[in-house]
View 1 (cartoon, helix red, strand yellow):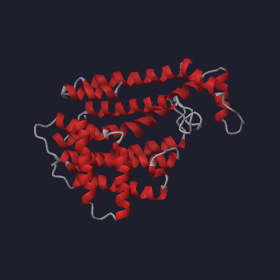
View 2: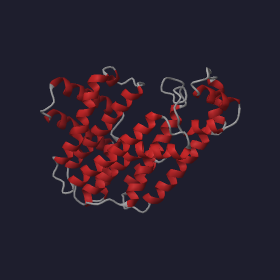
View 3: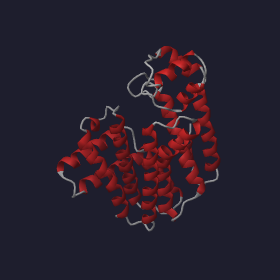
View 4: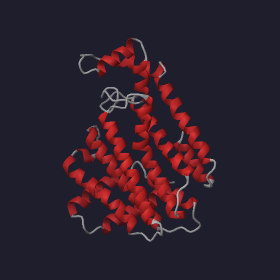
Length: 300
């Protein structure tokens, strides 16, 4: 997929260089943020191109522009998310007021870029972009409110927040290729986003720093499981989450309980449920093996 990243990055460079409305300072920050994003790769853009190639016989190179547009949208969401959480080391966190303007510019540019392509079904693609982006924003709002404190409500929240963005990427590629979307792609792409979020939740608990959800009194599947237990550690965590009680966590005991008390295993089990659901839908879609292999890696 390295070649795809290079195509997407080249399209981003051209798009940013040719954007005449933005002033020098704003464009410079945008280019700088894009370079930071480049280090982690363009996974959402890849999903778009992969699904476009799966359903068309003719490759229109404008698809790389669309993939670039999607990456701008994703980066804008990442920036806004980091500014809201105040826990990022990225450069955009150093100048939040200015960075917010860059994120807003990216949001507008995303649909503008797609609208300026030659695709027959570009209006449907923009509709998908807007619909699923709004769904993700609603999920982010629910996440910030921190009220999803049971399995069902938490999974519904991450389906909107994270599932919407992977679905958006896959469905735009598909609709540009054939003018319609399939229920199979809609389902498994959403599940990939859920799987990735659960993996992030698990990984985030392995480091006791300022991004740790437990230390920040936030909820995720392992924490929800831990809080449902009845033992000394879970009671200590409940007290810590209760703002009316002064409590100090025993980090070693809590980490041990998360790892060995079933919380992590529970989250992995839920992740695997979505993995098998996604695989069942993927098997019925005519995507080349190299594409299927890439999608399956995202489901692990």
